[in-house]
Length: 83
Image (tube, rainbow, N blue to C red; front, top):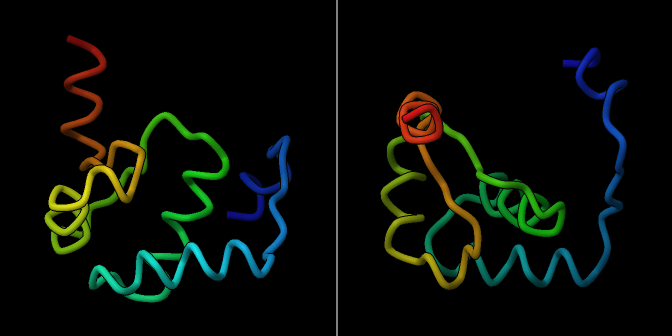
């Protein structure tokens, strides 16, 4: 994991605004850590948030406007990108 961090080009600091956005996502039923990861992913403007957590995937499908980025299983996402 640290090897990936050393290659990152951008760092996002935890701010009150980020915590507020995280709380909004938490109210949709996401865990604190999932909500925080999703908030940072949106702010980092990632192409997709990849996870193997089926509960997170299902919940994210229910709230696409609130999450604002695609949330997908890595294998499914790769199949879509390659095809």
